Length: 321
Image (cartoon, rainbow, N blue to C red; front, side, top):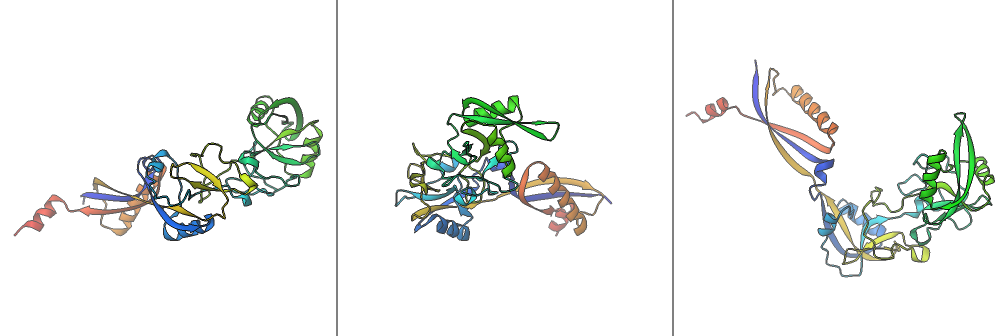
């Protein structure tokens, strides 16, 4: 027997496109003095997290009553991920050739390095002593390229022309393979022996991540910031003009939390089928198939439900005297 039913399909969540069209974060200003870590803990306990801000639309919805010069937001550059180590976080050191963090954890930092000087030292140079230095990527240095021959053998070529790190990377990729990747002391010595002056290596990192460890593509720093003044400014505060400044994470400030909101959407559908749509097993199978279709279209974090509307004949029967 054919079933001809009208369903209302309810789903909670959003797609990549729909998320950008709706204010899915609700911001809450908390007028309590806490360190950045304390504020993060409070926000995660009471809301979703310390505030993530990804657009001017988010900025326009931030209307806190600033009682202090700054309020903490969720942006930081955690030194545990990159200082004297080769971590695996979003802001850790990576190799140009792979875009991945170190496989072995090998490093050969000079004493006191890396120090994130002025918050712009996000590329790595090597001295003729084989030691590594974190350096402003816009500095002009010579560089070493590597090339792969005979499928596995690597050769290193010193280029004496001075370029920024990005320009050196582009040159190596055009003429050779890439800037060198160094995963052990043997490779470090081979790269070093090819050079005759301070030079760029392939090591770099992208600083500043949100509290949930996602990278930050939207930033509205105050002029001259971040500058890592004193060498210990790894967290971010926002002022009443919605400009950001790097600040010591131990300072006590009010803060902004966000609560993630979810959309509830209803879609009315008519389905004609010879299957018994009221059967729980059939019902579950159809919802699973619809979920797979939505996932393939970019929908995330959703929950499907439906309710079957009575047919006109059933409605008539319900209203008969």
